[in-house]
Image (cartoon, rainbow, N blue to C red; front, top):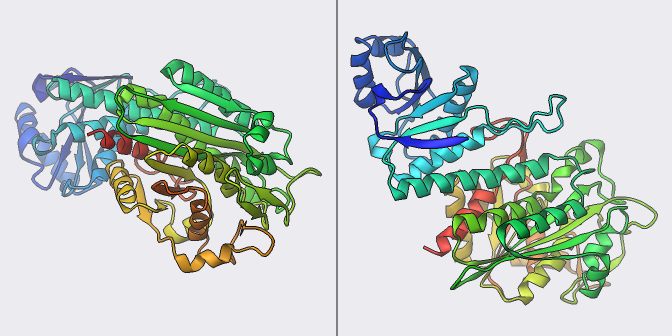
Length: 488
């Protein structure tokens, strides 16, 4: 995929499809200029199509050889003040380009929105919209890109070039996370994730470490071992560290890496189990972020941690009523083996907190309750530091990845009290997402911490702008933008 800029006028750009975003005054500006070159044919035909420049409206015009391109696509922006509007424009451009089999697509920014942030989102959305997961189809076509050239009518200055590179790295990282989540659990095992981490460490010059079963025992990570003991797949704990020169902050990120979740002895239903290859989406986010931090020039130290295990039933499996000891010494009565993500994160967060980072963030497909609370377009966030939470919400908004803060209700902490251990791993049935957050807080020490439960948004059954059906890559761009903001 080649993204370039051009300084020629809109009527001289040699492409197959020209995309023109517009607002309520759509007949002015670029449209008026093109209308003159088309002998006044453009505006009447577009008006006849009922186009008014409202958000999501689209109008296609065939130039009949009067301009270098075959088609002009007008895309309505409405007020144009929402970040998501530009992702919708990018989606429309990609969709029409594929339908028309265009080899080259030009994009004309609105003068009022020609800033580099907007251009970055357009290119980012364009690349995200072209993603397809065809790896296991008979054609063997992993065809993510079908349009080789995307041309922005913009100045080719250093700031613009940097924004376009940033957009490409953000989109590539999100698509990599999508690949990991879309692949089957028989392929993406804890060992597979560990091998991916080793490859990333080599490619990006990161410090890496992987703990096998013996290493987990030495590290006192009994929770990860306990969750994995029913599976033939051995667990892994993964650590990746990026250390730029003169870093002033250290950010630790931890991801839940349950490569398949059957529920263990508390077995899920068929419907509940069908999508559980995605239960390692938190791990996918961590790997994707670590694959991009050096390319993006992130200026803070980033430590990535993944607790990887498969949760399966067998004669060796964890039993309801068993007690595990987390790395920080707290004991946990396991009353539900299907609440396993919080168990593996207990070890990962304990380990991360021991390193005393300035900020600790975890991402997990932790609870089904979050979808009930927020639907499938918002993920939940909660934490111990309001500034960290607010900054992550802002980074999510800038990426059109919605985060909604839930409170860590102290009165609910009593639901985690156990008569035989320090904690139990489930509450009494209500406020499941908050209870999960309260449980994880027990393993974060005094480090400012935020928890993102994105079980609601990790995948989608219904395509929406820049997101085809399947894994979404949610969280990757949010976290990368948050890390970039810490160095600004």
